[in-house]
Amino acid sequence: MVIFQMDLVKAELQDALDFVLQEFAVQPSAIDYARELASGVWEYRENLDGLIQRESTEWEVSRMAVVDRNILRLAVYEMFILNEVPDRVAINEAVELAKRFGGPESGKFVNGILGSLIKNNSSSPQTGGGV
Image 1 (cartoon, rainbow, N blue to C red):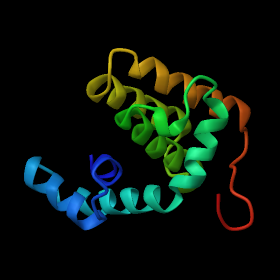
Image 2: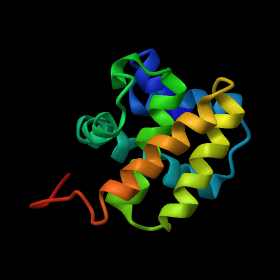
Image 3: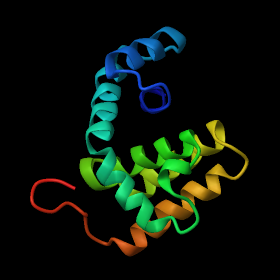
Image 4: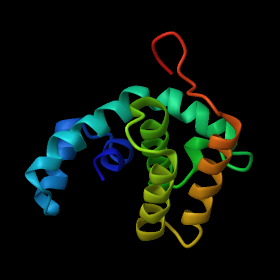
């Protein structure tokens, strides 16, 4: 939701985080991790978008639904930058988020892009200190 706010209304990280904290019950222990994820996704978003675009033959990243685009960014960041969760877990979480918050076909769309990304990038796309 924080990344969505940053992308859709061009909110600053802290403003987007404050909005989410006002609207949703968030465990205090999750706030720092949410900040870390949102900050990282935003910092690497151009690189993440490039990876997503390579696998998307039908849609430009900029034309994707805002929810789908940011779920994909988050999952790709978790898989290729953080490397803290197994790819299957990141994909499953992304698909569940897409089903819950996206359109009727979002789960399939997200699953297809991420599955293709894993298939075509067996090693991390990081090179020389960054994606």
